[in-house]
Amino acid sequence: MNGEAGSTQSHHFQAEVAELLNLMVHSVYSETDVFLRELISNGSDACDKLRYEAIARPDLLAGDDRLAIRIKPDSAARTLTISDNGIGMDRQELIDNLGTLARSGTKSFLKGLKEAKDGLGLIGQFGVGFYSAFMVADRIEVTSRRAGTGETWVWRSAGGGGFEVAPPSDEQASRVHRGTEIVLHLKGEASRYLQPFELERVVRTYSDHILFPIELVDDKGETRQVNAASALWQRAKSEVKAEDYTQAYRSIAMAFDEPALTLHYKVEGRQSYAVLLFVPTTPPFDLADPGRKGRVRLYVRRVFITDDADLLPAYLRFVRGVVDSEDLPLNISREMLQNNPQVKQIRNGLASRVIGELENTAGKEPETYLRLWNAFGAVLKEGIYEDQERRGQLLGLARFATTAGDKPRSLKEYVGDLKPNQTEIYYLVGESIERLRSNPKLEAARARGIEVLLLTDPIDAFWTMLPQEFEGKPLKSLSQGDVDFGIIPLLDKAQGGEKSGSADEASIVKAVKEALGDMVSEVRASQRLTDSAACLVASAQGRDRELERLLARQNRGGSAKPILELNMQHELVKVLDAARLGGRREEVADIASLLLDQAHILDGEVPADPAAFARRLNALVVRGLRTSQ
Image (cartoon, rainbow, N blue to C red; front, side):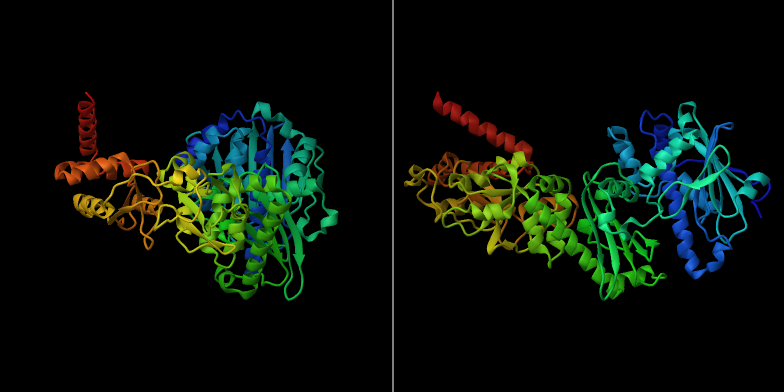
């Protein structure tokens, strides 16, 4: 049965698809070859799915077990046909797969596509490659018949606001016994894709390592295979050239950049598997997807199983590639993948090899590694929080902005430059490098030349909440708990003389606490400040101030009251002390509130009552001006 007579139905595209199609139809991209790579990749996926489903249902192959992709140009009709005899699609799948974008982050993808100089590089990464065909075609017809069914359906669109799904003509139905046929009615400027030699060039450049034969029908009607169709990962490294790896990476990862690192090896012994992994040069577009899914494909004896096997931990999700097992069963399910001891061993082995390769690169090619860290460091740091077994290795791989200069530094470099008597690694977490560099909590450390790590990635607020150490030196936050630099010498020894401070620190602390009440959990004299009047810190048992802010933005738990630290040598604190001694309680309360509001502002926060802050500040300024007259 080939559909139902008179059952043509028109549909509107999902809004995001319509916007994407508008970009494709009016594309100004000069590199349009991507469309063919994408359609071939879709055909390969369809063949993979059929081969996998046929493990349980051999009848789906129905005497046609040679899976292939065929390309046929027709100069007279100005059409290019790409067909496969894979799994095919039924009517609803045509509507769902070609009429909507189901993946999250669609809007951010469209924004990136509009803004990116290399917009094509985003197309394959995001899995919307079918629509790239509208760069070269003004009309597309897709005829498809799902394996194991008797119905054939045609999807067609001119790239406007919608599409229609209809029964096929007798001719269309006779051409597609199983799988999918895509007919592109080419634009005038896309005539070169009617030339067999041009089509062969594109296939060899982008799709040579597709595992299924790609056949090209020339203008004489003769058919020949134009790709190698070999599993590159099963070949010996000595047989593979650098350009072969690049082509394989671009085909597997749907990318246009060069692989920064390539891992190609075989494991033999209790279990056997081949590995071909790539670390990209530029971050994949889906790196920030909330699902944090990996994209390493699992094959079993050259049969594609899934790209959702989580073969690497989430913090290595930027790695792309293939793992081909000789031992796993072909019918392994997702549940079995989660609990299979062989898969667990593969996971552990892959993670160790990738981290080991990163360590080698960091040691032998520090500039190359620094570029990788700039691209993927924020993701790698997720592992410091999640992977207790490899935490030490990941800390060693980390590179940090610090107060010692503009170049990122390793913890090994930091520990090698510790000041006399320094026993801790100090850090500060915040939103930006600029704000952290001006943070008053750095003052006492700066006076002693102590290097401080400046952490600005959101994940930094989480991994630093766990007890961490490197080479026996604990990591210590400058915005949490007590800090005592007393035994570390000052850079300028003249600063070490006795300073004229407030005589009765305990009384000042008590007065300020009474004035502020439960707005702060504690008031105390500061060991962090040398120039500023006050700062806010968290208790040693509480969460870091930056983590508090992140959680507050997500409405996840209440915020703990901060500790207010006072610089007892600061003139404003001395003015407060004088008001206390003079019994001017209202003035003490105003200055105490002003100190608290200043501390909030220095942390990038808005005072609890901006109007009251402005009033107190104005009053203090006016009082000072009158005194000076």
